Length: 500
Image (cartoon, rainbow, N blue to C red; front, side):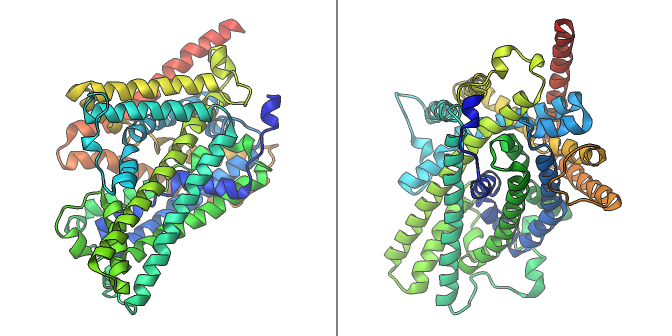
């Protein structure tokens, strides 16, 4: 523990970069523009106002008051609603992030391919006579082991990588911003996607997003695009003056992310004509970011009057840079998620609930044994999915469906516990935004309605298109993970009682 105290503390700028790297998804903006055009902006602003901002302020209060807590989200919940439900809520959250690690490790080669080849060629990758799926699986496993190795060596490595990821996340936004403005200037203020009064910001050009059901599904997507702030609770004890740095970092990052989403969506219209690019039906949610960034480069070339060949070269360079930026952002997020969720869960809970090895810290102050167990679990899943054929693929689909709402489910615990947190006596509150009891309870109720509605609709939506299996596994996910957590907690609690 002495060595960990000598580790360089994380400052405000690094924290903001880490938050941006973990939450802000540049890829969310072209997807939003593809689905609803300019009309998506109002829903992103609304999601920021009714979900992201109030919840971020709640987390800022939690973090500043529990500044000495090593367990992040677990410690916040335990201090508000008790050990048992803190254990259940955090376990559900951790299970969903482990599924995310599996998904991300299996797919990070796509942006890597875009960097090298200018497009996704992973379907043709082969190593040692393995199929493309098996090859990507092996690369994913190696990636997990490398990230875990460096993450377990201390917060310095995690902070540096995530800072680089956040910086390149901002860089691709900055490049997009500059080139988009230049396109607008050279085109004499003419937008590729015209604005036809307020209707352009209300009605989607996409025929698939004109029904109430589709609109609600997009609102849920916009809300979930702001998820992930709670993972930062796991680094509280690594911050310089956490009672000041954490709330400031959250507020700065919240403003940057919310404004960034709205502004970026609007600026896609500088270079992209919706019907021209999306009318053919060949662009998907998976490749839309690369298509639009490539189109941005071509539009820039056309605007400044270069040859068609040179414009295509600009497009190819933009695609490659985008792939590189997304790759670094994903790696930055992966470093944080490899450490923060498992650390919050293990270090926040009572050590007597776990075998001694699990809670033991290495020289860098990291729960290395627990992190390697997590890495092994992730690698086993990747291996099984990659080499298990169609049955394994179906299993992973089920696992993904089970995690659909599990990442957001703990927000119900965090938001629901907030009024109990406000009632706590003899607690230092260096940062306090919610001071009026009536308005606090009203905002908590609104956030719970928004979250519950989003989760409920995520479960109901597959039923509307007759995908009953997807609906079942989506609903059963948090129930199953919660049941496992309860059983584990009860068994461990009995062992703890006998020990004491």
